[in-house]
Length: 158
Image: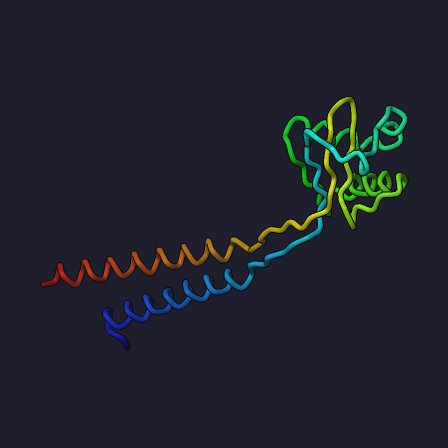
């Protein structure tokens, strides 16, 4: 049988290993990703060769574009990602209809005296499984607490 001191050191060691292992597991679950998005930016000036004039007729066919442009007016730059595919498709359809290619270059839209620059770009993010980080913190806390208790009782016996 192990005496109390060795048993407690073994428990501290086990919790320390579990804490480190779950933290390393968290680090291995981090995924950095990137995707192509469509940027809609309000601008002051436009290049006349690359302008699409929006009318009520156009907006009635492309109603999602009007919604995106109103968000741009309120918030500034808007990035349409893969989760907003319908809006992206409408912008691509509109530009193709007007003989522009968003994948190659940028386009300006003009609506009621307001100008917007539309272009594709790359954006990204980071995803992870935070449960492993939470477990690492919990096991680390248990390790530190158990160690502190052992140190306290060691000095109390003297």
